[in-house]
Amino acid sequence: MIRKEIGKLIRGAIEDLQKKRDFPGFEIPEVLVEAQKEGKYGDYSTNVAFQLAKIVKKSPEEVAKLIISNLKSQIPSPSSILPLRVGGGGVGEIFLFEKLEAVGGFVNFFVSKKYLQKQVGEILKEKNKYGNLKVGKGEKINVEFVSANPTGPLTLGNGRGGFCGDVLANVLEKAGYKTTREYYINDTGEQIRKLGHSIIGDSEAVYKGDYIEGLRKEVKGNDSAKVGEKGARLLLKKMIKPTIKKMGIKFDVWFSEKKLGKEVGKTIDFLKEKGLTYEKDGALWFASTKFGDDKDRVLVKEDKEKTYFASDIAYLKNKFSRGFEKLIFFLGADHYGYVARMKAGVEALGYRKEQTDFIVMQLVRLIENGKEVKMSKRSGIYVTIDELIEEVGLDTARFFFLSRSSDTHLDFDFNLAKDKSNKNPVCYIQYAYARICSILRKAQNKSQIQNHKSQINPKSKIQNSKLLNHNSELGLIKQLIKFPEIVEDTARDYQVQRIPQYAFSLADAFHKFYENCQVITEDKKITESRLVLVEATKIVLKNTLDLMGISSPEKM
Image (cartoon, rainbow, N blue to C red):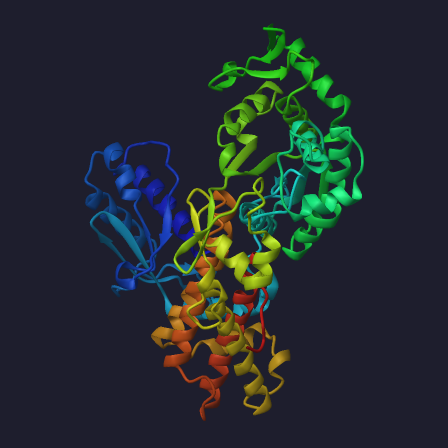
């Protein structure tokens, strides 16, 4: 990735300046390099000069100019163009930058045309592996998401966490992690008894809706716990798992809370032995405040029933015992307070808090004709994820749920989601892919190039791409080479909304290229070069849609 190359060059320049004593000795901080949306200030920029200014006791502008001067001195040139090279400085070398400048303390990099042209061939060579990274180094990660109590159908809130969890798992796999998707089934305890009361229809009934009436016909009995367990199993089999399949999600593990069994007691004994529990008011407490929680938590209630939290700690222990080095949990908006106690549990078990990450999904509102559609599982008035998918389609549902950061509320625009025009961002992106396929079919039918589909020779591809000089062509390539960076950034900060945003930007760059550059022309070489770019775009756009679990239609 070019961003990494820039980071290495900057570090090298700083080290050289330290050796020359232009800078004092210090540990070089992480060099942050960001792609720029506007080419006015380069294609990539770094604020490292601001980071170093206080350390070296110079202004950011002075620091930036010293770094640039050092970079330019690496390879002498009579030209004002910066000839930093990729490829070892021999035959076949590629100039990495055409220009770099210091503006207000920022160091800005302008990527060379030759480098951009070369990347088209690299994309064609790697195909669906383009964007595959090794940053994960095979680390085992467990991603748990949805995990809704089996007490009713999955609603919009479950859908948001479900799609985001699934896509994050895709990204982590692309980045080189060994990822396991897991659903935790809360199939015992108070919620299950409440389901039982609801099926029985007694004074302690909580849940309402047609599905409860249906369960009442299949599950008989007066014992709320047993009735609830039978009802939960039926809901899991007949409603939840089919919905998960409809959502396009495949869980590697369905973990039943009941399977923890004796592990809960053993975990409590473990905490007792470490002196991390105490008795108070007839209950057994975990001293979670020792690990940063705001208050201690009950493990065993006065009636000797173990709490959900006791099961949660045992579940953490179970996961780590399976060899996972990192645990990621997607939680509902009402579970924010859950994070501190879980991290306390992790540390009490002897692991590092940093080995767990919790992503709290904020609420979803369904907006139709400018008004919110109310939903409540308990009142029986709700919108299920099944109903939403049937109305707007899986691709649209996925995209809309992914489009906003998990820590912000999401207004799902039902009217826009049903719109099949280019106003709908999903249609806009998929239309770009369909247009690409149409161009390639047309080229093949008109025999503009020979054996187009089998034309894989990298040298030929690179040769063809040398004619890509139009601003729209270069702008499209700049979007294409951002894909590995998008994968890396998302694998590190879990901001999955970055993927649909990138997909839209890529589609937009392609549509602009199509408008400004006729692909199939009378000039065979120009046609070949642009078809090469179209093929590369097809690969990257398909890879992006695959990450989101969204289809790639060849015709629309």
